Length: 532
Picture 1 (tube, rainbow, N blue to C red):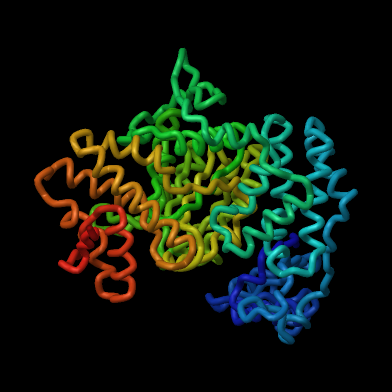
Picture 2 (cartoon, rainbow, N blue to C red; picture 1 turned 180 degrees about the vertical axis):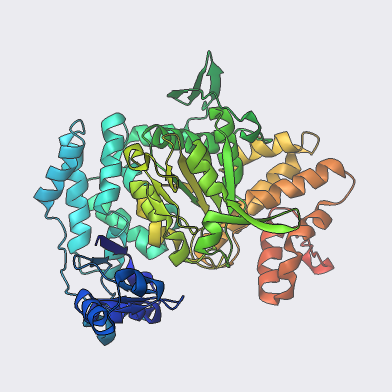
C-alpha cells in the first residue's frame, strides 16, 4: 500500500507504458509468472464465491492490491513540433490526472538560491537570474535551448561555487554550464550577445588567468596543490586501484584539473565533455593519481542495458555467476567511478544514474537497493548504504557528427558539474610534444602543431567533419622519435589515409598540410618557383 514514483515516463517506449493501463483503469494486473493482482472488492467477492481462504488464493497466485496504493508519474512536457518527444498521445491522456508545474518566478528563485546558499554575493545572484530569465522569456528558439542548460539545479550549483570562491567570474561559470565551446556558431553568438546585454563580460583577470603559464601542481606534507587550490591527500585501503599513467603536464590541462578539484571539494559529480582523443581519460587518471583515490572503471557501449550497469556476468568453475558491477563496488567501498563513453549508451539506460547522483538511491537488477540514509539499512541484507566518499566522473564525446553518440549532455547534463576539455593551445601542445619526442627537430614539431591547429579550426567552421586531436599528433611524434629516418610525409599518411577515399576531402587536407610544409601527396606541379 505504498506510493510508487515513476520518474521520466517521457523516455519510456509508449507500448511499454500502456502495460500499466489495466492497473490504472481497472486496478488489476496479470504478471509474467501467471500471478494476478486484483482490486480489494473483486478479491473479496472471489473469496466468498469460491469459499477459499487467503492462503488458498495465494497458493493459486491471486493477490489483493492494497486500497491505498497510488502512482505518481513525473515527465517533461512534449516538445511542440518535434518528432521524437510526442509521447503524450490519446492513449496516455486517459491514464493520469495531470498537474503542470510552473517555473519559478524570479523572486521565488532568488529566495530559494539565497536560502540554500546564504554566503553567495547578492549582486552576482541577481545578475545571473536576470540573464537566465531573459533567456527563458525570449521567443528565439536558439536562446530558449540555452535556457534549458541553466535550470534551477544548475543555478544552485553555480551559486554554491560562488559562495566558496567569490573571486571567480560569472562569465566563466555561465560558459561552463552551457558548454559554450561545443555550441553551434549561431547559439554561441546568441549566448555572447545576451551575456553582453546583461553586462556579464569576461574580466581582465579572466583573460590574464588564461594566459598565465605558471600553473603547477605539487604535493607538500600530505597536501595537494593545483594552481591556487589545495586539498588533503587521501589514504586509500586499496592502493592497487589508484591509477598511475604517463602524463606530461601542460597549462591547459592543469587549468581543467584545478576547475575539477574545486567542484570535487564541493561534493559534485563531474562530467567531462570533449572530442575524441583530447586526453579526457589521461586527465582523469592523473587527477585521481594526484588525489590518491582508487578508481573503478566502466565503459559503456550501444548494447549497454540497465542490468549490465549493475550486474556483471563471470564464469566461475564452468558456471555463470553474477557479481557486482564496478558501479556497485564503487558505491560500497567509496571509490571513484569513472564511466567512459557515456554518450554511446542509450539515454534511457544512462538516465538511471540520475536518481543515484541526485538522491543517492537506486534499485539494482537483482532487487537490492542503494540508499543514502544508513538508518534505512539497519537489519536489512538487501540494502546497500552509499559510501560518503563515492563520486562519479563521467566522460562523453560532444554530441553530433562525427561521433554519432546520444545527447548525454542534453538529457543528463544539469545533474553533473560539466567541464569542456579541448585540444591544448599551440604553446601547451608544443611543450607536451617536446616531452614525447625529445629528439624530434623543433621545426618538425612546429609544423605539426600549426598544421593540426588549422585542421581543427576547419572542423569548427564545418569545412571538414573530423576534428583531428592531440592523440593523432602524439602518435606521429612517437613514431618520428622511434624511426627518425622516416620522412614526415610518410608518417603523416598513417593518420590521413582514411580520408584519401574522398577526393574533395583529400584536396582540402593536402592543401592545408602543404601550407605548413608537410609534403604529403606532392606532385611536380605543387612546386611553385619564384619569378626573376
